[in-house]
Amino acid sequence: MAGRDNVAQAAIAPCASGRWQGNSLSDMRRRMVDRVATGLCWAATVLVLLMLFSILFVLVRNGVGGLRWVTFVHVTLPPGQGGGLANAIAGSLIQTGLAVLIGAPVGLLVGIYLAEFTATDGRFINLVRFVSDLLLSAPSILVGLFIYMIVVVPTGHFSGMAGALALSMLVVPVVVRTTEDMLRLVPLSMREAAIALGAPRWRVILFVCLRAARDGVATGILLALARVSGETAPLLFTSLGNMNWSVSPTAPMASLPVTIYQYAGAAYEDWTALAWTGALLITAGILMINITVRLGLGRNRK
Amino acid sequence: MDRSATSPSALMGVARGNGDAAFAAIVRCAAALILLGLGGMVAVMAWGARGAFATFGPAFIIDKAWNPVTQHFGAAAPVFGTLVTALLAIALAVPLAFGIAVWLTEIASARIAGVIGTLIQLLAAVPSIIFGMWGFAVLVPFMAHYVEPFASHTLGRMPGIGPLFRGAPYGTGFLTGGMILAVMITPFISAVMRDVFLSMPAVLKESAYGLGMTRWEVVRRIILPWSRTSVVGGIMLGLGRALGETMAITFVIGNANHIGWSLFSPGNTIASLIALEFPESAMGSLKFSSLMAAGFLLMLISLGTLVCSRLLLRTRSAGR
Image (cartoon, rainbow over all chains, first blue to last red; front, side, top):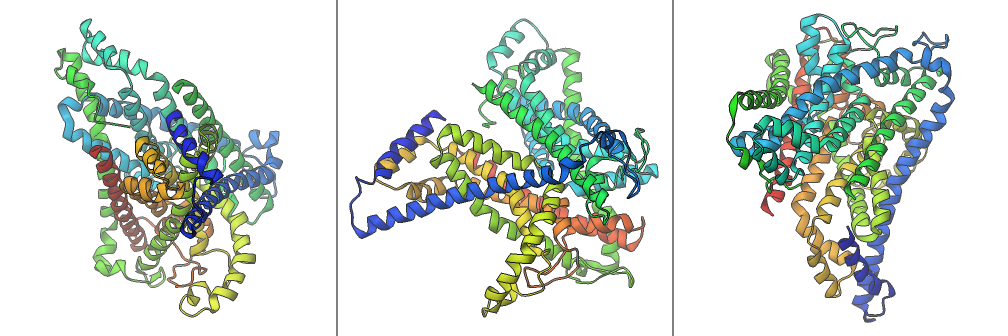
């Protein structure tokens, strides 16, 4: 970072004063082009930041009114009868929790495989890493369709478990990525020391390498949690949603994103207001996880 | 991250004892699970789609009809909508992402770039349904009241490009969908661009500045040629995301199975079609199968794009 900055400043300083340049027409043209390009870069950055603030502003303006006690303790009710989001909040927590419980161990194991077994399974590892990267960006609605076909259809009903499974398919590639990257940062000397003491390979990996990479791996799991807690599309055909209080993973289960989706398009004012409150809650939660993780990472890197 | 440099397992190449064999078997099973996941997705979609492909044949892809009453289905309109919105999104997002990446790496000081870069990455963390609601509440009225009437009165009267900007100003439609997607994918593309710009050896830039190049000339003549492959890979990654996006686009696309040349006309995408119509289709019906077939097409399109993206991004990091 520091090196880059020196370059930029050394180069920009004379450029900004403009004294070293000749005054010929082509020099003026070059300087104009440079100014215009710089201005456009500023404009692009400002425009996208404005979008972010506009989204946050609209969320707070429309959603803050619904942050009342009743929203958190009452289940969803038909329009005009009040009601809250309690079942949706509980459903979201259960489903994302289960998704992480299922997805994180698998992601960890695959991450370990990609980082630690390169000597023996090189080619297969490249394939697995490639496919895991594909899953990272695969359309999430198709993940929902897949789980519908292999879980909902055979069991005969929608369920919170099916929703959690769909989400866990999105957790795995995120955890794989960070786990592999973090394990590769563990110094070779630590492995050598452990092996020299006679530890078997699996103990070296689990109790030395993974322990050293603990913070980074936890970060990856948190980011995966943040990512799936806002996913709507995979839940539409798996956990479906539920108007009543239900915490059983074998029954259809409500979730914040699906409730938001159903309420946002409704024609009833109290429903749209609740949708905005739900949207505010979920965005605030996700952004908080992200900010915490990024601040933590920044501190560790120094 | 350089994946090839470290190879700790070289020194652990030989497995010792039963524990190691068991552990290796477990992690290999987990890895196979990943392959099974993607392979299973493709296979299940193809299996579900067999009814539609058997009934309509390959013409399903180019058939414009989507009529549950006559049981006649074709994917041309949603495929068209998917491609148009994704390409519009790329056209809008690439200049923005490039501008941001140049600003972060070449213009802003390191400390400010750190803060602003984090803020822009936060935009990538916002769930897609929030983009949809924001688009519906903010962007759609804005387009309907200001942009679309103005554009159809000015650009719409021009010969040649006129038809692109005509039509009723609903606010929803291809252009609005493309704009929402553009806001969503800009952080992804700019993150890839920033990383490769930062990974460039400083001496290349220093020598160019030393020869008296302006900043823009360094970006245009030195940085861009050096990082071209990865930049294209990043753009393809954004395209892959835009193609498969569901919730954001469902709110603003207008949901009409319609192919129109006007950017303002309502349309549909595959993902949005599935989200809306799947709950209303009975298992085993022709409509169900047609939706699975549309999903299968989406799978092929987006996997194709993502494979290109990963190959481009990988060749580059392996080559240097």
